[in-house]
View 1 (tube, rainbow, N blue to C red):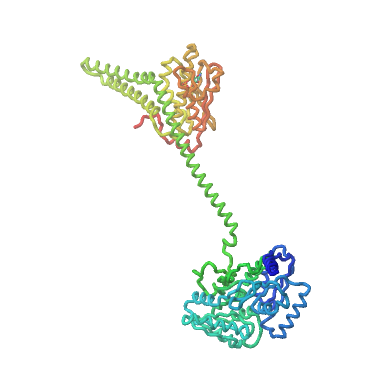
View 2: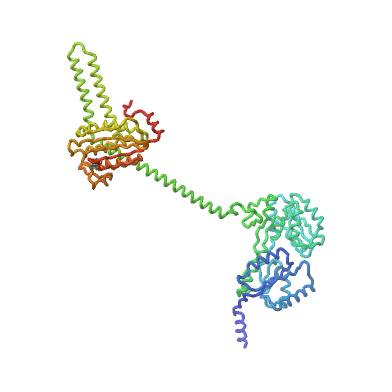
Length: 622
Ligand code: ADP
């Protein structure tokens, strides 16, 4: 029998507690009146944290303890609550405040037997031993922490004036404060204005000097017996005081007080709501582990911080600044982030473009250098091709010099009087021949020297005259009639004169080659120049073998050649050079032979003026 009973008891104890219904009612019994700001905040927190989907009712009752007390009132309240909630029994009771908790503990067995209780707004000092199903997180008003912070922010302050009220609750707080303030002596002295008549309060607070601050938990009744909420009293005190006022409740923030180290009443409601949620989920009240106290933070009214010039540096990370105008970044954080991202993207893009541009420039200058080197190499090849005619060109004046020198010696050897006119003619001939030889060498050096590529205006006619002088002997040696149809005038293009010279010489060498195997009557090559407003066109025409149809598309390709000793670079490099001058080169099959044309853009007038000022490059250098 005993064993059966023991098993039954164990089963009852271990049986999982049924979860409370989703429509369970919750009754909140507040110690104070309905409009006490702390109650409003607690209710806000509670409602916000009720379990999602909770369909039960939240009932609220107010003991209005500071104003109504006594056994009769208490009994009447018990009767009232019993009758009122007979048909709508709450599943959970919330005791909001110490008076409420005391009332519930005293009358729960009659009113709501077995209903779990969640307490809030009760400090641990006010909590006696509690039944296992009465749980909650104690609230601690950090009076000492607030005073300590205030004294640190006002290091010159020597006196703290503490204002309390005249109701029994006010007196209880006064007693607690008197006990707690002892620890701050001798750092500061404490003067209590406890329940003093309002006129005196007005006078005393208004006369305070910079070595004082005020601390007040507010009061429910002033020294004249007028009842009010502590928040209303805080508004009054902050208006009167000539020095900063500190307080222990967050509901005072906004009344004109600076602030203090305090718990938030809203959070007290939230915490209680979360405990309710766990109870409704079926957790056993005795097994719910809760923190020893609700956390506090340093709440301040930023307008008061600025008003009193308080330096909050080093206040710690838990400073909560109310009424602080949001900074630009707080206000436009998203826009600022977007702008920052765009800025970074733009910077990255710009950097990328700059790097790319540099790389391109480097590549371009490397291409230019290679092109110049290639052009020079092919000019050397031209030099080699022209070797015979160059030798001929130089030999002629050298021969003339020799002949004239021999003639002079003969005259001198003949003895007698030497006719000075004859000698003068001989010496003049020698001088002319010498100039002619040095002119050949000058042109050759200009053609073959390795030099920087130039970008300057030059006359096309001058350039063609130089080509004529260089190629005349070559054509003669090959027995080809070379004709230059260059009209008078100065057609200016901008670029590298030597490179353009090289192009025309290339075309002429090809034309001379093409005439090699044709009858003597067709061995004719002509170079002509036509200019209009925009361009100058140089045409090199021969009556040679012409270009077979199958080769026409490949003429300008590198290494394309039909000659056994050809390199196939002449036309290819010519096109590269003409392109670099913004011009165009093309070949046509003419009626008899080939016509190759080079069109170059004419320079704007300012370049023409510059070219006209420049010395004629055909004149020997000084
Ligand atoms: P290469 O003279 O070394 O062969 P080019 O690039 O100057 O190289 O010429 C390529 C080819 O184009 C020549 O081998 C020749 O077949 C053809 N060609 C060029 N000019 C003429 C021309 N005036 N008449 C006929 N064929 C030509």
